[in-house]
Image 1 (cartoon, rainbow, N blue to C red):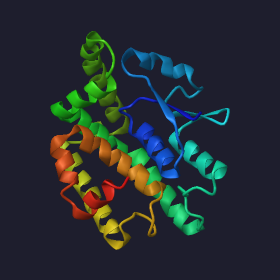
Image 2: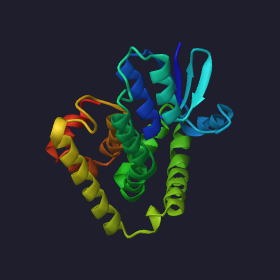
Image 3: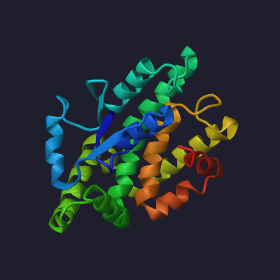
Image 4: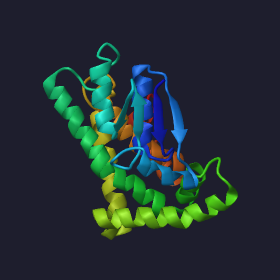
Length: 224
């Protein structure tokens, strides 16, 4: 049995779930919603999710999981291309999504009251009502601190959002070539970038609509 330990609202956990589905690997999920999140540090030395239990091993971090899946299941659809140059491009897109695009997703989650409410509802799903009430200030505080420490939280809101639009325009331009970010088939680049954008779509009506207003992005994102 393959088990994904996840915080359901995490784009990195959703990234791993999409990788498993892309490979055609059946799995079950364990959600650490609400106060169950206190158990996450006990899952691995790193103390974060996603964590994957597979073949008697426990693997933490979405990138390490991706590498393992291609090594363990080389005959299933590949996350990383075999061609070294294309693989390098995929790794660059993945790293950009994980280390930069992620903070735009967090910005919209914190700055958009409706998006924050959606995120709280998802992250406390199945938990008692009092936990939902507690989650909102805790989640907003934690995410705001994360943004400030990274630097995005110190920028003007208008500047952050203008820069995000520039990123969308670049993604749209690249997708206009083959419909995928690297080469002519889906790779981890698409899953990594798409997982960040799909979290914005899921929780923010305004920015979700903006993302889907780009025709190539709209066509691409429903395939992930």
